[in-house]
Image (cartoon, rainbow, N blue to C red):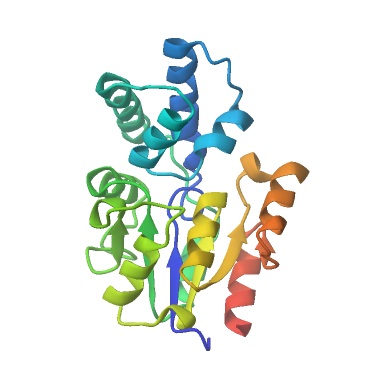
Length: 222
């Protein structure tokens, strides 16, 4: 690889877990605020964001959530993790094994992300505190570039030498704003529709993949 650092999002890229967190929030939004949102609408408005950013977006939409709402969502998330409902993206280990330098930069908070990584058996083997960067470390989450730039700096590289692998629109936007090359990984079924693909293409992203074996081949040629 000519690029020196690969930065992975976690939910939807390392594990097929983004859909779990969104379903939990969709359920609570509809239960408490009678929004009637389907999954696609939920993903459109708050997909790929930290809970802090989700809360701000909802406020801007006139939906004022309280601390109890987010507490319940987090409790449901932790129950899903405890029940081993998360699944690793197939062949992700093969991709990581072919890369000299990589890290995770996720919109999740540290405590929850640590549990997620441990639950899929990748803590201490592929990830540790030296290559894990969570939204708690920066003031602004995705779609702002802060977290990717922070991770890049801590890993000792320049943005131009980095590749970001993302599944969400806000994550891809953050990577572009950070001045990094961006790969769209759409391996989860929640992204496999023409409407979402068009949103990705509208960002100008051309490197779009649906399985990690193809990502591996791309990175080895990059």
